Image (cartoon, rainbow, N blue to C red; front, side, top):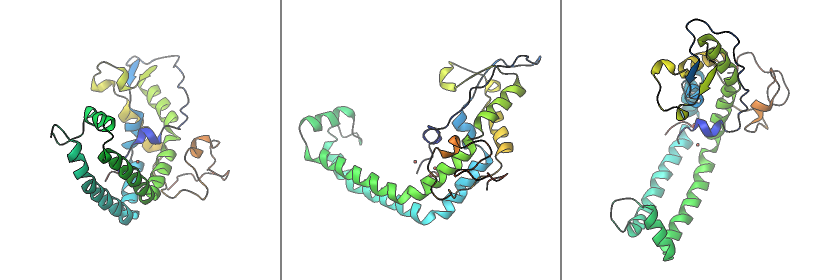
Length: 225
């Protein structure tokens, strides 16, 4: 499985960062940052990923074996529809097969849907564990961003995709990761009973899902396979 922090953060509620009234002499007014990358680089997420890979190794290995087997099953169907023989199905080839009502295309689609459902069941526990780990870290993301901006004297923070070019010194991502490492030194990969993704962001400050006080230091689609 591949880690997708962006998808896992889709429900995160990030508070707006207030503009700073005063800037130090060495202030960097505008910087860029990749929040997803900042979270992925934290010590807490790295440790959680390793723990998930160990805890769910059997099912993740089973899922990988099934993924390989499914690909082998589908390959003959791909080959039939690959009219230019370049080893892959292009959109024009898919459109042509669809227009001709080729049974191979329908078979591919049916098998892919069944495979997604099967792999989802196998990888579900590991994915849930990863979602919980990411959610615990993302709950402190806004605070980490504010702190990093304050220390750098930054008033405007942009995502890399919004910038034409930037020097490495203008990247605030490592600073945000450092703040997160301090704020969230570790996370748990065991969601409490009844937990659902998105609850961590909605919970009041200082409270864990379910209304109970949060511990002072809570213990990757699951980790990349």
